[in-house]
Length: 167
Image 1 (cartoon, helix red, strand yellow):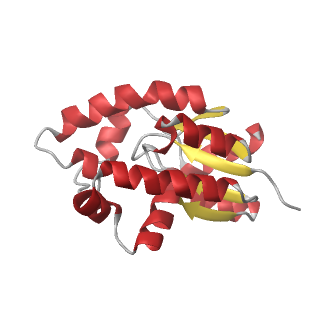
Image 2 (tube, rainbow, N blue to C red):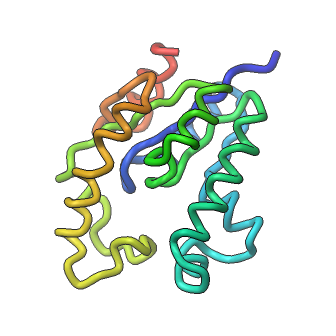
Image 3 (tube, rainbow, N blue to C red):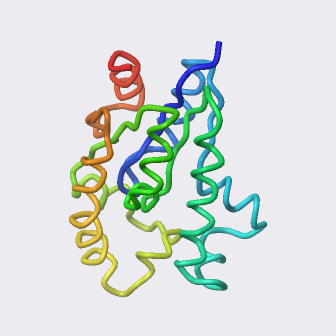
């Protein structure tokens, strides 16, 4: 039986990939990380796409991938941190699934991202300030997009169980 997709959103470092993999195992649904999906199609990392072609080009690839994946069923999809800041992507994913916000306090995100150099939008001298400003800008958009909001500061298993009980 084909089921609605579970679309995970939230700020970078909230655990979308970790929770997505675990949810996939628990539900038997296939897991797709949207950033990895785009990387495979382009044969480049997100950082390389940003460096070579810019953020606007990456966001177009992300929109195309969102539309494509929203046509499928029985997927657990981990969106990129910026994916659901665009209403077009929110609308696409809502046609085929439930959007789950993995909500974590900014302090937890800061701790989890210590030493992470893979985030193009944070590769700046003022990384901490940039991260906090982006967090404040994006959280209301995630909250508005979400069908379900869970506390992702808990253990991955607890988060997974809470998501499953809310679906």
